[in-house]
Image (cartoon, rainbow, N blue to C red; front, top):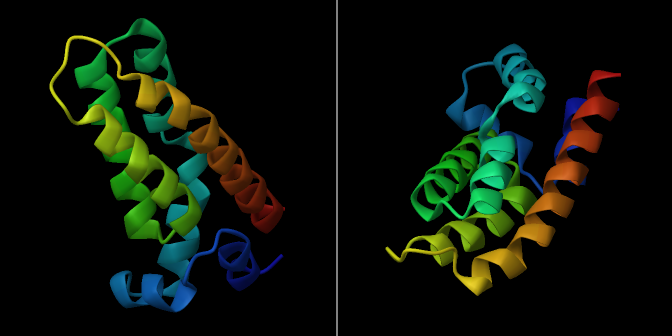
Length: 119
């Protein structure tokens, strides 16, 4: 799989990412580092703990990483989750709990495409 095919699988726009990052090698390098990013695992752990502020922080971080790397599908689902977690409440809102499975599915699909690209 080429990097362009990887981005197609992610509903991403490779050309846009090249506009933000100065070289294809740098894009490839950051894409390759994404599976090691701890934001998703932290999001899941904080959701399970019921820690809304930390879950929000992890979701917001993951959203930013996805936006910068052009992982559009995952960025959209985690963006919805981020907004569900934004209100300052003592508990995780039920809407956030309901959105997490879609984020999980999109995250898994993102990792699958990246692993296919990396070979």
